[in-house]
Length: 628
Image (cartoon, rainbow, N blue to C red):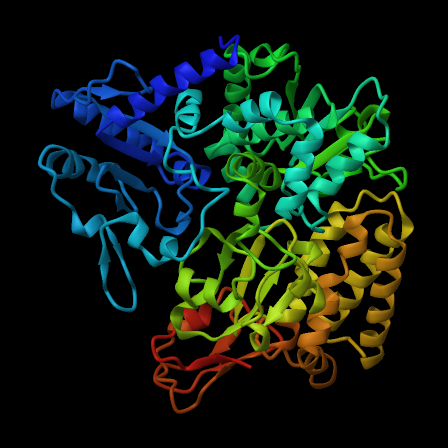
């Protein structure tokens, strides 16, 4: 246990020396994505084979390592999720992709024992065929600027010693011994950091209000929003799994800045690995005297607990989150009073999300000017996106604010697969809007996205191609928010449901042109009158698709056609006469007997029977069946 600043500094020097002594390391990605793909089995097999070959291994950072042992590490998420399970070899920096248990013997024999690179396990560019040995040379990584994700994938996610060795808890130490609380807040204000959870409220202003408005409060709180309910978003999960101490350190710094002695991390129970590693990190920080009473002998107290959420999307809203922590049903509260005045248990509270907190130690260590040098005039720093959908390479991407969508999709994400055209990207999940192809060169920051009717949100970025129906996309997100509405206010509970019914009516071929105007009017009403952010932003997917893809809505209503051939009620399967060979394969495959025809004669489809399952198209070898 570190009782003083000097004890921490002395141990840090020893940990740095131990980390530098690890000349060889194997880092196996143990993020959720790779674990689900068998990464832990790969880790166990590598360890078994190394021991069988009498190779000394260290599973934990050891000050006694003389360089002869190989460090075997379970790291956090490397970010390149589509290529997992991932294994990084140090000191070469080689990255092996899609590693299976059966590859382990070759890795040990060739790479570990002989120092040879295995080309077949390296990343191969699809278009050029170029093979990249080193992780940093892969285009997916090369064009990123990793601040928040700096340690994810490069250190043992469960080791407080490794975190301290790479600069961990230096920022907390600096704050409580060398800075006043007001100075800490000013540093965050000067950095320009804005909340990464959605609306982008200046983080320093939130802290300043919590410190100043109720200076004589007997108790203040710090809350971390790790609920992350947006479909397709997994940024916060990966940070909590791969760098949990960064979040803990940031929350302690926040507590010092605003005068809080207690914090809560609210994490969805569906994140078991994140919960496990956070709890381990909290226990270790308490054990070493970096949390709890009289931290490093400074007189500053800060305790931290985890609270599990049950998966309610509305609990991503700060007042609903606090209500849930209190043990009540997660419902939002009217504001004002704002949480900075009356938050958790009625006390002044600061709430930020995981990614926001993860920036804080870097800002304190490197300075506000360093952080503000990245990004745009009003949106400083970097942003982490969970890149998914119709994209070559899915995964976590961290880029400077102001990076264009085209750069993320084409240069980092590898473009749209199968020769399809980019159509739109959905940002902000159910609360956001879509960026169409015509705006693909828009620099992504808070203000630019707001100006086109979108929002940053927490960072989900879903890419869509020409085969996506934008009306169907809008309905998908409305279906989600209808289920997730807490039902407390009428505009959200009833309004979103009516909006969903209008979209469903259009998709089923029963829409009228007046429905489009009525939807826009309903959207405006919901945005202006809903109690919390869930209801206020729920109409955004509808408004954005109406704005940029109104022609698709008109086609559904007037022509009774779905241009993308997605909406089943507006779609027919037809057999092309000059391509049909009469092989009967489609007829034999049809589950409802909707296809008739004799051998070597033209077949036909009974539209009344057809359930539009697509089995016939998948079966036909002659491309004789099309959707219209």
